Length: 445
Image 1 (cartoon, helix red, strand yellow):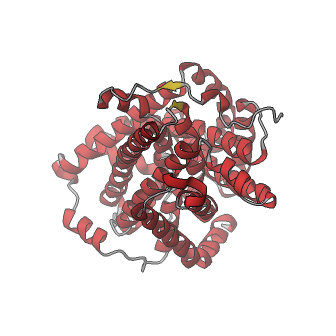
Image 2 (cartoon, one colour; image 1 turned 90 degrees about the vertical axis):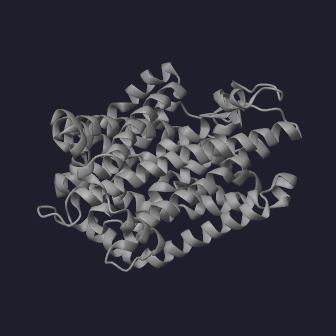
């Protein structure tokens, strides 16, 4: 470890050239598109799939409004993260280290690491389920196999992160297209659009367990480590540090965030809707069904059970591996930003994965294979409870003239940002007693 440099993700800073101001829209778009796409992969990871599937299977469309609201809040917060990185040239962790008292560095770093470990637990479980579906490997052994993905990560990085993310996003988009065909074209799987509109317009958490699952959806969608990561990734563009250059960068990053996260929302909503149609109220599916392991049946009407299982498993494995890359990068950002510790990416990856594998092995070893969804949802609830520790500092910086000067968020974005924060914190506090009780039930069996 060394403290010779205070840049996070030093090798990525200013590596992507930006065209001159007179260039057309598409040239600028191609230059700036990427950071939000990279971040959006985390919004389509196995944790999202697990909570969306459970929500649709158990409560039909009644939690669709939570997916929509969480996605909207994610857009607002990721735009704020991009603004912070572009306006200051620093990421969120660096700003916290520089502007907050010295004693806050270690607690902030530990909370961030806990969130990253919870997210990586979801990637472990999702990848293990995919290996189980593809090769019929026992789930416990599949979890252990995910521990060597650090070697796969090093091999894939030779092709460049942007290439990998483009391929993985294409796989996720393939799933999205299949779901779109099932929802809007196949006559056998048309959803009740009236019930969907009613669920969106009448938010409720009245059912037993709905508040806990809603918190899981929020944690799976608005990920705290993505706020740190996005504020660092936008600095990979070599932006002119002039007023016009910064404004242009802000404008295109807003567009990048809106487009990428809107696509992620459509895929998450489609998973919930298809789960509601295939599983809700059907005999043979109990409330404690391990939904992530039967999720491929949502594609069976279009592809047949065999092809559906293969395609779903490949996409699930790809999303888990892709999110692994972003989780590693986020871990580097918080470690380098808060503590000025610089370690090799493979070692960073290995540490994070070991922290995630240990609870997964213990849980599956003691409880068996039938409760992966429970552990997935629990990991996302942990993420939601950690979110205020990243969200509040982000909004504090981006809405303050003292910290951002003329680049601070306008009144509309400031109001939306703090409203999102208030909603998430209120939801956390409201659901905390029930969440702790259900978490104990999940852990204790």
